[in-house]
Image (cartoon, rainbow, N blue to C red; front, side, top):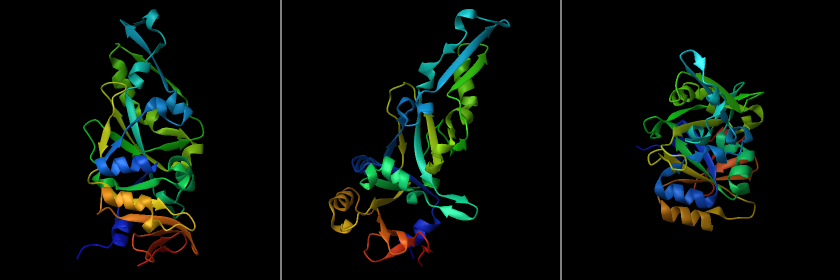
Length: 259
């Protein structure tokens, strides 16, 4: 016997991507998630990352290369950000239950939270993924000492955890899991295959609306009839998650999963 929606959702190692409704429809249809350009990140430190290298020949630094700004190489790196569930002092903070994410990335609640099975993401050769670490202070610039001009690429990759996976603590609410990829060319569009990983869609229901008969629900179902749609809404027990059959709650903020 197949597992119910509640069982599948509860047992899955979940990642969440908040986006506009228009973008969500493109993702659901193409089953691809586009990597974001480093220069277009919301975090000012990330969008202005600077790398300097000093190249050494025969034990001597070459003066005209001192402090060489490696902007072109840095701009080849692209990333995808997911929210994830986090456990702190025994309490679980679900990634879909983050109000700032709904407001900032999902069009003030008018957008979508896409839910992925972490174990089913299809990474390309060279992709690298891990949790983001949050710190009190993060520098925007990094310096390297290399023996050749070509050594910069290897040095950036060697220090990738430090460069791409450290953010200041004010971003901690994002509970981020990140994927990075080095593109061949700076402005090339790169995509992550999510054809097997995309598992649920969550829409945010506003008071007085009928989500199950709304335009968003209808349009998503016309793109992928089998993809389960869940409703995130305010209920008597706080914020609740409902499956796409009305009056069948699968989760509440205080009570956990219903079985």
